[in-house]
Length: 197
Length: 325
Image 1 (cartoon, rainbow over the protein chains, first blue to last red):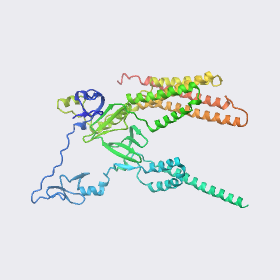
Image 2: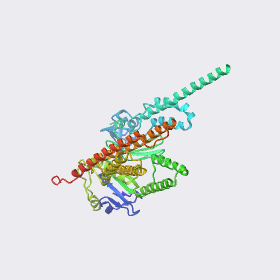
Image 3: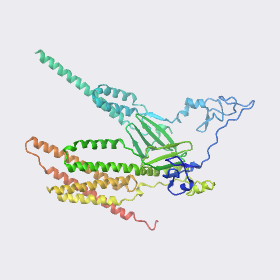
Image 4: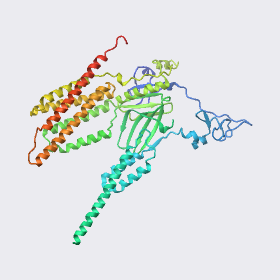
């Protein structure tokens, strides 16, 4: 079982790995710190090879020429060795797994998430660089935050303080614009009144 | 367990760029690699039962975090005003900037590393592990957890593998992690820090009413020494070389110095501004200023005594127990 060098990918020699902490790479000369775990020596599981169905034998729903080894716990279709998917000790067919029926939803692991709270916070702050844009981003941030409030956050961050801060900044920008419009209108009206006198 | 309910604990190492970042988290049965790009996080899970090896290779890594970049930009921006500075300040600025650049280069070359995690079907770089001390801390954190799941290998596994007998795997007994509290309560740096606290506060208290510029400079230098020692203590704590109590004292002293600096500066500026406005003229030594100094030095002395107690208690408790050992 070779352990490759983290720098050049060449296999580290075993006599180097037997030293306590650092293993020198014979190719690039770097001193690797190596931690090896028992999984390195676990025998790889043999690939599932479905057997051919003989006449009169139950066959797989998706592969009629292959012998069925079980029935799907959800829909009852026969599945061959290749198609059988084990979930919590039960056999499921690929269609039920893909359809996300029942508990299959629970085993779905998200590969990525969009950080709506970061978007909500960044937009009003970034718009301050060109402040006239805040007339759009201020109320826009409040609406966006309210709309995406219940969307899942990051897997590792569980707090919604970014949303709260975004809403506060958005409200401040909106109120600022309202005040500016009212103040300007009052100034304009006073100017007109004074001019008419 | 539903993925949404999984509780993650942050592992050592973090890389935060302007548009991308990376971090590692420990879940109940897996390590989660989080890569951030703009407003999207991508996750990769390495189950503890599947990890075959973790390899760290030294190599230059030139990385600047956003925080570092901002501080550096502000610092470089201050250089624009060099024309109005005295020559000695300009020379000091240049020397300090060069020293900082050299230190960053030195750390990037000497302490850079590349960490890679291997499973049966994948090999993945861990971008957040790019300094050797972070890699050591990361290995200290994950190794016991993997050993809990997989067991441990015999020390002579490589020899056994060479003779094709295959390594023997020890029983999956929980491996005790080295607690942080096991770190020594004091080091040479923390002793110097305690000494600097006591000396700085004693000299400060004795000379706070002296109007001489000489004593002012002496106190400034002593404060800088104290701050430098506090930084060293914090670095040592992050590397697991010192226990928590001294780290707390270091944080408290740094906070005290920082708060005092700002309070003094703003108070002085506001009072003098008000006096100038009233046509009285500025004052160099005013009563509140002296009192603020006395309070600061008094608190520093208290912290110095606390750290001395920690050091002395540690000096006795760190001695080996002959009966137990």
